[in-house]
Length: 188
Image (cartoon, rainbow, N blue to C red):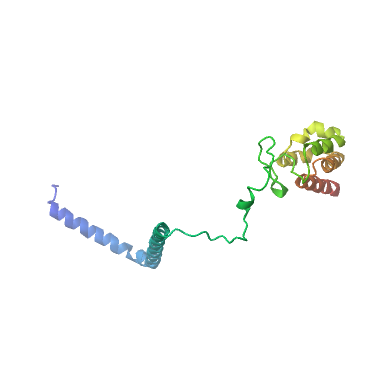
């Protein structure tokens, strides 16, 4: 069979496509409302974005023409203003330290009011560390590391660690973790 002329092939291709699209019409009619709704939502969001861009550009232009005045009242104080007046906090070993329930991955001591280096050393020297402190290298453990070791400890060791923590650093998250583990272990 020979090749048909270009125009005939074009008409047959257009007719085949029209037939295929006609067969798809029932399915397309079902999805048409969602397609229209999606397109309308897209157009609305695009218009909103364009309007927001124009407003931002207008704000920038007005700010260049009319610089804003200092709107902070004399009596208002903010944390940024107080940072200059506060003494710098000691950084210790450069490790980020947090307090409270967010101290999950720190091992540093919390800063206590009026606690200088001499007071910290005296407090640590007063406490006679039990053997379990040395076995676990407790002083260097973070809260997460201690939590991982708790299941293998006896109740007596847990109580010794809790007493040691209370006598030395008294970190609330560590004390809570130890006390909760003691409660669970004695309830079994």
